[in-house]
Image (cartoon, rainbow over all chains, first blue to last red; front, side):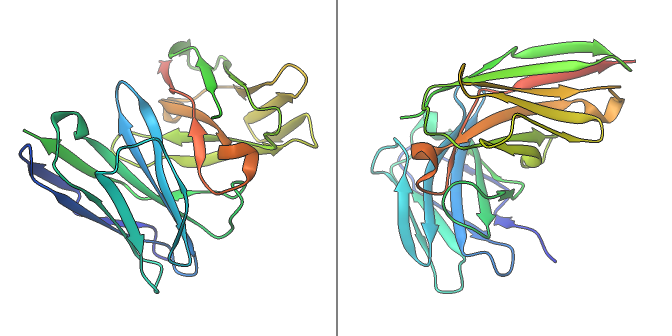
Length: 114
Length: 114
């Protein structure tokens, strides 16, 4: 069974631009969540989707948004990029909802903002 | 929201010795306590978890203990090996388990000295 796939793996943007990251969950998983990982703040929850509905959102500005499609694939978008948005963005899928199931992470999309 | 503190941030042990990583949490409603391991260039991977109805769980060389009264849980790795070198994260569910998504500790960089 294929794991969680994230694209692109690496990307460089400049301040003010926007970026879209993609995540394909494990087949059969309907829950997808996104995390931002930085050396200073560690792993921080961005948002979680289940059956195309956002179930939960972390403490990030409105520039961060996401969506989930009917095939459970998910995208996240960051608009008006800032230097501080440089991070590894991790997507995770899970079979069950309710916060007590194993999360399967992709290898992440590393965003550098110049 | 939920707060998770993890100590130490770096832990260096001799190969064959034991390693212990501790986490404390703030929400007494938390009912699920996973530990994730992140190797360089990869996403985090679940290595062991415990639910609030048990105090200890073992899986070969790793174990997790939970003290709900004191609101802390620990990861124990015995007979450490070079492949145990990684960053380890504890986590608790957001909102005590009401929605998918986790609050992670800041991580412990475990170094196994040959």
